[in-house]
Amino acid sequence: MSIEQQLQAGIAGLGLGLPEGAEAKLLAYLALLDKWNRVYNLTAVREAERMVSHHLLDSLAAVPFFHSGTVLDVGSGGGLPGIPLAITRPDMQVTLIDSIAKKTAFLLQAKAELGLANLSVVTGRVEGYRPEAGFDAITSRAFADLKEFVTLTRHLLKPTGRWLAMKGLMPHEEIASLPEWVKVSANHVLAVPGLDAARHLIVLELVA
Image 1 (cartoon, rainbow, N blue to C red):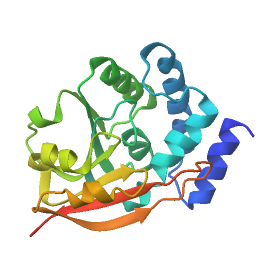
Image 2 (image 1 turned 90 degrees about the horizontal axis):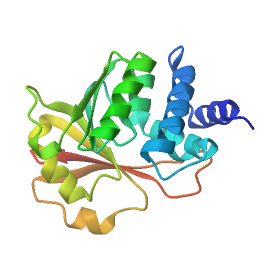
Image 3 (image 1 turned 120 degrees about the vertical axis):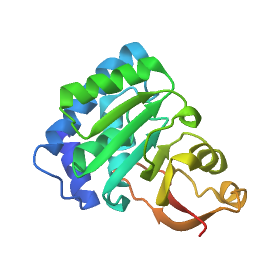
Image 4 (image 1 turned 90 degrees about the vertical axis):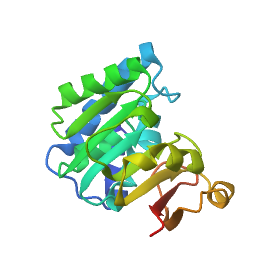
């Protein structure tokens, strides 16, 4: 099965309806990630075939749980899940932040090559990031444990906003150690085509 067929089958398996041209952009992003990865070590996954399931489809599985508005992808690294989100949800404004300049150089290149007008890239540490307005959603994929994630980004979330943390196994211990000002509002079990591993999307909100 080609990479294109693998992606098409995965999108169908997830039941996603994507905007016109999104599939081509996802493949172009994958090719760019594969190329840069050889020099910059953006991801531990080396084979493009495995990148489809481990990166693209893994990120796309979370897409239906994002509402419209503004999203911050913390510790974005190679642009996951932020770039697939920006490609498939042009109605959203997606900001990627990473403290490592070589990673944000790649993200800026991807933004330019893929023509993603709804994508912004910030180089810096999230605790020092002070934009004019907060975000409707803050997401991360393997950035930190839940307590650290919400504590470092609390100042960036709108009062009505939500955190969407992508996790592997159900993080019971991390949930137990969450601060009292945050609550788990949902836990979505994600079935990722081609990925034989547990995946959870933990949704958190501020306690009213």
